[in-house]
Image (cartoon, rainbow, N blue to C red; front, side, top):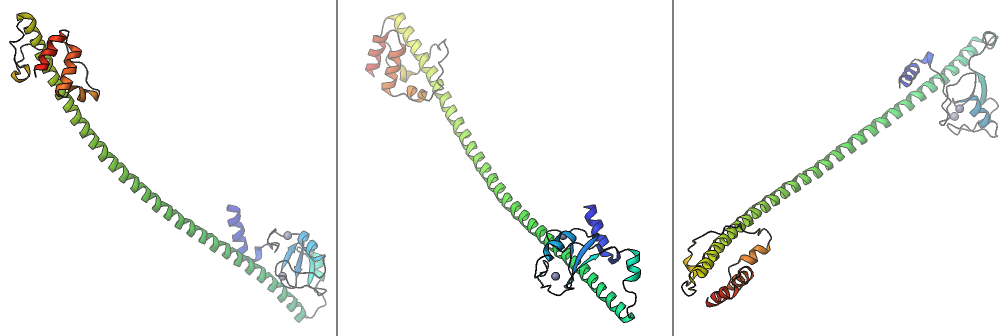
Length: 262
Ligand SMILES: [Zn+2]
Ligand SMILES: [Zn+2]
């Protein structure tokens, strides 16, 4: 990253600008020998010798036909002092200036090309950043919607749970009521049994259900009737009551005859 920044800073200063191979796959920093073209492009020694060994030579950067004898030129980028001392010697000053002017034009073109490429890359990266931001905003919005839907679901489930709790308490209350009724009946049964066995006068007791007198509570605790069948078992219909008494009374015949009276 720091290297890239340093390179771009170098590119800004024309004197320190380093030519890069114009082959878009290569873009190597050039040193030693390079291939320059009449269309103002430059290539590393490897790409230049590959591309320009064919005839007709075509510039890989801009597809210009380079058919002239001096359209492609292999040059030494850092020539020796001896070469620099002699290369323009003997030429007319106008020619020297013309050559320098063309060489500087080439340089300006390369610098501008790099600048434009950097600007293009920068704007493309900026576009990608904008797209990413847009995408993130969309993602956030959709997640927010999902979250709100889930919150709504949780709220409605809580409501349902509260309803069930209410129903459960109601059922529990009813069950307790049934248990109390059972205790009462058990007490009645016990007192009836004691009375019947004690006096032997079974006709004396007329109707234990209507009198409702509980002389003695059952000493043993009521069985657990937490099963839902408890409702059915303890409904006070005559058939169920009969079944209950038949099941739990040892003096079966007597109790049965008593039930039959009803
Ligand atoms: Zn190259
Ligand atoms: Zn070209």
